[in-house]
Length: 379
Image (cartoon, rainbow, N blue to C red; front, side, top):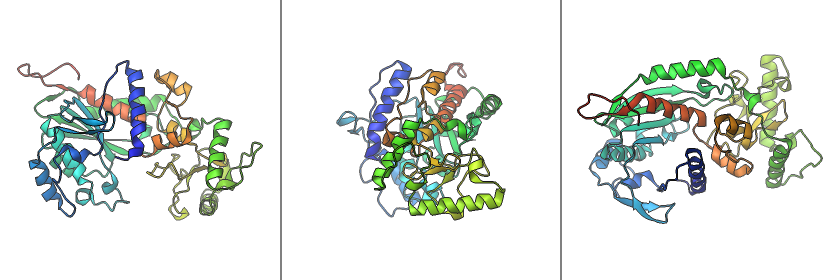
């Protein structure tokens, strides 16, 4: 785990405790593969060899905990496991190696741990190209239900983030109560009938916040910051970004016959070459945020500036404004610190989608009661 995430996770735990009203004392372990004894796998092993080694490796009973500064037990009984398992090997950028890629050890270790502890319910998030065969290989005691979702399914029509969410129900400990596919369809219909947040709805940054972020970028790029309320921030683009912006402007004008500044929902991703046309022109959605999203710019031609870190968080469903937090009836998730907000967004799950998928999993599956032939209670 990236050490830069440790403080963010600690803060998220605190926020969750304020939401629930319950205190807890969670552990944070550095590496999922460390739940198995050391040297259970090594570089160069094939997937099948790793899988076999993982099945026969002993589980560690404890591991160094970042939160407590000591070895803590890894044998905690978990009722509901929500995991974002590695996606690089599933993507085109990772050459679609899937089970042959280096991150297969995380799937193997996660599967061995949840199988050994007989975790009743799993929810796994990944890119839509997830290798389901590997997930089934590594989690042999769970039945899987693969759902697909994008933010527009929960009312966030102005941002792209298509993902798969896989529910895993333990065969011995879990019983099905309702069809998760049907429930997802019902919820999607309700959301799309009542909510439609578009790109312009995410532009929540104040003038002060916009200029604070602009001044920080000017400092980093050693460009004199123009005081006095300069609204056009093109002068803060790097030469490569400016070239990309100009080429995308020309392509948009040629293709759609209108000036980019006249399109209220137009967003350019300036982290790619202009040849890829990574923009919202055709989909009306902010292009999918990347791992390097905290450094790359999402340019707004109409506003002549980029999306701030706070606005990216807003598009990802985080309660980072008083209005959103109030509507959700949860504490405000602070986003004034630019770097913190950018780190929090990064390559995160969509906040609202994640909550809805957990709701679906917990509503559709319950604990199997021995001798009762089923269960009517939820976890």
